[in-house]
Image (cartoon, rainbow, N blue to C red; front, side):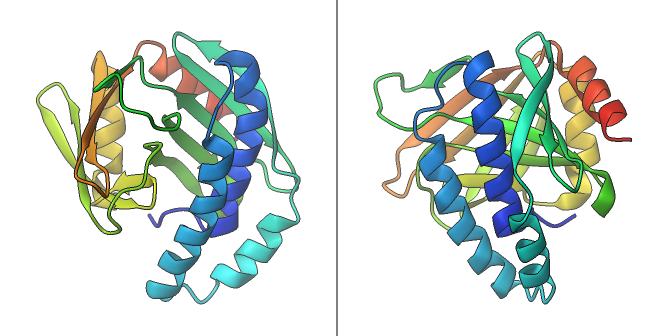
Length: 209
């Protein structure tokens, strides 16, 4: 499974930003992250030889990108975009960030469903600070560890084949710990609660059937 295209990710972040503000509070720098993600993923798409990226981006750009909250389960919110192609997301913010006094933008993890593209359980993580492009980060759920790869302020599962295992581990676990270093070498550790995740994913999946 490939990471979302540039304008698709922008639509996700912009649309979810409008809805999340009512559930989780102000998003801070997420708007700026959306613009950065657009540029970052455009370069990534070109590098990976995604010949259809331009066509998909143009189509995605025509969509409104607005998102509506359709449920809250524990610390997870569920959203649906309003546009030509239905897209649903389960989203959460970390409960704890270490070190606590370091200034950075808000962080999020969201898991998306795009039935028109046959995409399920697509995982994207926003760290809220610039990381080394192509750099490695780590996600830990109990005894399970997963490698991440970074681009700008965003990270994805390094091995797409592990996304299913990652989702199942999250459903069974109590917390997700994400560690990543900034371009200056400073490591941030974000801890996400997983209570309510299973229900949130079920809601998103059913909404986007």
